[in-house]
Structures are given as C-alpha cells and as structure tokens.
Length: 297
Image (tube, rainbow, N blue to C red; front, side):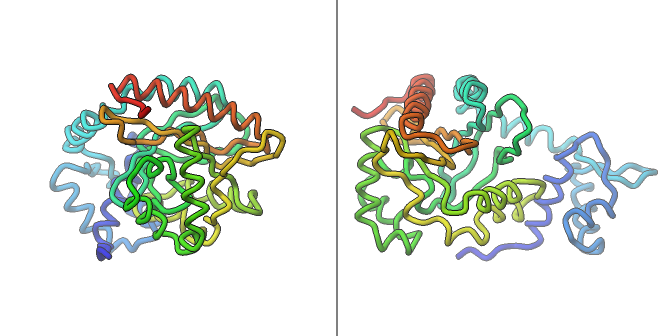
C-alpha cells in the first residue's frame, strides 16, 4: 500500500477549502478551525502556496484566497475533462425529469471517481451531496457495470476486493450476467436504510481533501454486502434503490464510465424500477453515441 503523506493531504485540503467560496478571504484561524489543524502546521504551507501564486494573502486583513497561478491549472483541467462534455445535457435532463441526482462515474486505478454531477430542481429533501472529484473504493457491490463486460481476470480481481462477497462469488457472477443482458445494475439500500443514508449525507457534506475522500466508506464497508446488488427484478416486489447504473462505452465497445441515478427517495415496485433502468440505459446509450462509442452486440 502506498504510504499517505499528511503534509500533501493538508495542502489539498487548504486549496479545496479556499475553492469552496472563492470570493471570500479566509484567515489562518478560519482555516485552522475548519481543517482541525494547528496554525503552526498550516502557516508554512500557506506561505509556500502564496510564494508560488496559488494563494494570495491580503496585505492588511491577512486573509487568504486562491491566486492567479491556479487559473491556467484549472483551464488545463477543463480541457482534460472536455471528453465528458457530451454527457452534461442528457444528464441534466434526466436529473430534472427524475428528481434525482445523476452522475457519471469513471474508474481511476482502484477507485470510482465522480466525473460529472447533475442536480434536480431544488426541494426540501436532503440530497447526497456528491460532487466532481469525489471517490470511493471500487469494490463489490459498487461499480458492477464497470466490470460486467470485463474479462474473467478483472471480474475475479474485483470480487476479491470484498472478502464477504468473494465467499459467494458464483451468485455475483450470475448477477453480472443479468446486468449484461439488461444493461443496467441496481444497488439497493442495506437493512436500516435511513441510518445508512444519514451516514452517506454526512459523509458528503462539508469536508475537504483526503478527509472527504475517505468519509463515505469509513465504517460502512461491513454494510456493503452481497444482497445490495439486485439480481432478478420482480415487478411486484418493493425496492429501495441507492443507485441505478448503466454503462457508457467507447469506440471499441469497452466500458469507460457508468451513468448513475442516485438515491430514489422512497420504495418503488420492480416495474417502476425497471422503467427507471430503461430510461437510464437509453440516456447512457445517447452518451455513448455522442462520444462515438459502440454498444456491444
């Protein structure tokens, strides 16, 4: 396992915190209090960020905000993610029509990374506050559509990341077959869905850097059990989906991302769930076509 660097993590947290409200200057005390770090630890980091122009320090108020040297970095990042631009309009339409958060997930090493997020019209329901750049570990039952079309070696490696699931790998392989046939996957809430959702909402609330990156799965891994991944869908049964997912393919017919509809607010019938899956699949196919991709026959 790669050793983590606390100093690097703090630098990332500082930049993300200042980016959260870019027009507001933040004092050293503000930053220290929010990030839970000593001023003596943060001050040298802020001094270096100021020296290179990533951060600007107000001459009299002694507050910090993002600096001009980050602008070209952001421009370069925008160019790098333009490949997912065709997903934005259909994602936004789906989010508004369904009333749920819609996001595009891409694999990155052993993680799942949120590449794009579309929000529905505002309402009083607390939403899972996922945002671009959030990530969680790619382990069963999460990310099944990203491996359903993969070779046996990749599927086995994915299953082995969750020892509990690995013990029942034959069932999971059968579910992956179903996912390939219908081209969408469903992950449903585990027992005590309200408690799980409260943790998820808390995890995706205000946090920065590595703290935000690790919150969602902290203490929840034991809840990610084999029953969360839905196999056969019974039209009359009730389901409480955490996410519904459909693959996006590239020119070679390889899965490059997963279109996800998150956190359906109440239990729905299998028939309703199937309708959501078909609508999501159609949207994912539209994105595949926009990217010049090919859905495998």
